[in-house]
Amino acid sequence: QLVQSGPEVKKPGASVKVSCKASGSKFGSSSVQWVRQARGQRPEWIGWIVLGSGYTNYAEKVQGRVTITRDRSTGTAYMELTSLRSEDTAVYFCAAGTTMVMQVWGGGTTVIVSS
Amino acid sequence: EIVMTQSPASVSVSPGESATLSCRASQGVSNFVAWYQQRPGQPPRFLIYGASTRATGVPDRFSGSGSGTEFTLTISSLQSEDFAVYYCQQYNNGLTFGGGTKVEI
Image 1 (cartoon, rainbow over the protein chains, first blue to last red):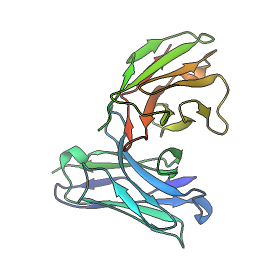
Image 2: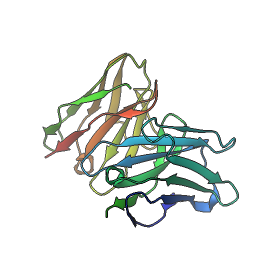
Image 3: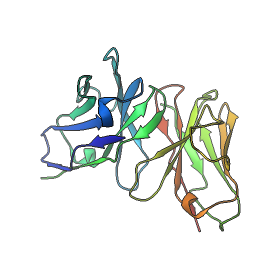
């Protein structure tokens, strides 16, 4: 089970950091992915992190604004998005699995960007 | 970017009937396709990978097929909990999702 941090309301230009904690501090997977979904829209891949090496890969659309990290000691992954815009408003999901598929999903974190 | 196009956008079926959902890739993705189910207000649920292999715990009424650019998810003998939106996702080159098919009563 993955437990995500609570909802966030941010102003344009601000940053947000969302956390994703694995129950028992163990993800039980090789990677953690981050996906966002605007209301009524398809999911959109943001990036992933390989838990062992810390290697990351990001979607071109958010490259330069997103950073995914992990803390292996606490079994927590983080997704930080900077220079927020209104179009970043969405539910952000973490998911444990591989770098290809998302096997176990967190409950989602709503991020609203509004002035 | 590989674009995944799903059809139909919605399909109406009765419990006990079958539903066939289609997903087309803008270029060949081999069999690197997964399917997810999303109920309202819930995160997606992982159903199928490798185009046809069911994830752990997924009932055998869910079956996937296809390769290259054409993929299908078939749900046989639909049950009430199966009414949801279904997304395909390719992972051959990057990761992209289809627009979804809503299965409704």
